[in-house]
Image (cartoon, rainbow, N blue to C red; front, side, top):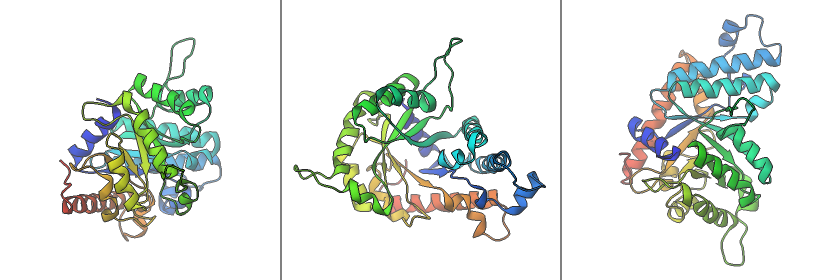
Length: 312
């Protein structure tokens, strides 16, 4: 069973195709929470990283029995320097300890040798004289396919060797994605369709018993027609679907990204969960995040059921 099949199994167990994005920044934290752990307030990168990490711990504790996975976006930790990267590593470790599948949203890639180093760092292990060790120990990483197979094969090799996975950028959710991704080749395919075809082929050697490979695709919920077409085009590829909630996509928009059995995709929500306390007056931030995650689960499941794709 590869990591995408494990993710699918956990989604089925919890009846929840949600990944909570921990794009955590100090502006999202209630002042009362910050003061409870740092009476002097945030005065340094170290203070900021500690506040972010403690916030993440509370969220993971509130979500781990109802949400199958978290996605930790590295940019929100890199900006706090080395202390932020320590918080990044600790967040990954804590979420995995709580039984969640962890995605490192790093969107890395480079030429072969450098790509292999990125793969070792996030979804593999780094060789040392005393034996190999894992650096950040995520289950899945996001990667950019722009360098072609030279940059993807090291990640695919790491997936096969370590039981991990990657999500490759195919059709992203941002408004300007079409500037490049919608460009057409002479054969009529768009760039994102050409990448989709490559991703489907790159994952062939890592397909599990259910047919899904360890090489997945990022497919934005903000483009529902393209998502439906890509689902048919990529029958063996698991989708990470951003764009729900704060970016405007709804449960109805994502249904086409799932296969006929209600499998094959997981939907990300970040700010709508991280900042749920701002819209739920009187609730603690972790309680509000849990309430929003439950609301999202109900929305996604009802929309899938309405089109005959109830999660089994």
